[in-house]
Image 1: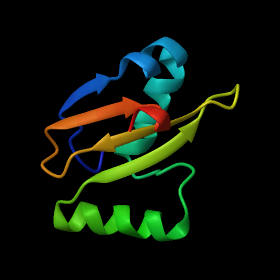
Image 2: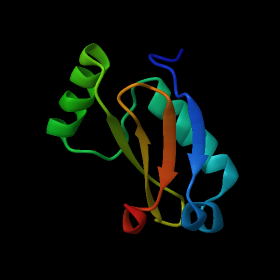
Image 3: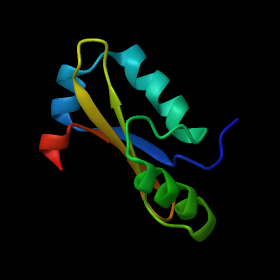
Length: 88
């Protein structure tokens, strides 16, 4: 069950070209349910706090082939962006 709204979901051109659709959908589900993926403990705590205080949330995941990507939900929950770290 989702812990917050993802708002409009967008994906950058690089992420769209490089990432598998099913892996992105799986990561979006994980992100919305509070599974922050491959972030350090401090970032996990920051994301948990962001849920309470209405701040930006950032998760990090990897595809089966090892491609790292991020999912960022803005503070007002209006937009969630899927992107490659190099596109930040």
